[in-house]
Image (cartoon, rainbow, N blue to C red):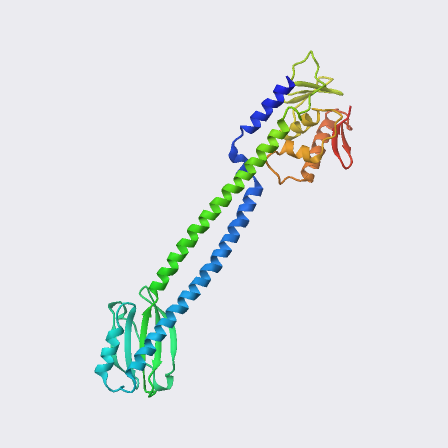
Length: 324
């Protein structure tokens, strides 16, 4: 009968919802939080590096394009038609505008429809120097490059779109996010599987009939769910304690589980780890203070109801036992 009772208890524990061993476990959520933080940190560093690399490459391309136009013009700065033809050759695709400005006057201005309203004030001769900046206009990110001519009286201004760079960054972000999500999901499943295995292994160990202690202090004339101790009975069917003078005491679930566990083998010393596993089988975050607190509450409640105060004895350095 005792063996069947312990086997039944083990089966009930094994049939508990698996999600409680994972979703209700603080270790799982703390570990998942650390994993998520590390993934986000790695993703941030990776995307920042990709952004910097692509932006640098796009800016260098715009500068090279403007410098090529300037070099092709050489000393023919007065031939506006030639300059227009040169600028028209490059003003397509990602190039949204190309200007030739001489002595503060715009001589050639070629633009795409997207930047017709963009205000590009000509620079004075005292402002002529190589310049590169980024401009946002109507959903376009442009690299604005100013390259002075060799006579220092004019310059070529070119605006190259970086939207292709942005699109590349978005694709890179989507790829990294997908990989990170897959990694997070995989690690979460591995962590959950490990927690389930550990819970099942601990439950099977505690409910094994070879290791489960037999309850020797069972009175043959009472039901198997009644255990007699010095001065009172534990009625497991009604979940209450009945003293010899007939007074009944109903304990909170954890306190009842504690005395029922200690009373399973009166005189045997149960370690704090054994008590913690019994009271909180799926929560590894509980500490020695929690065990001590419940021992204190149980002793106080028993003492208030006339049960001998030294019933639960502390064996220093080992644990607790029921005195017999």
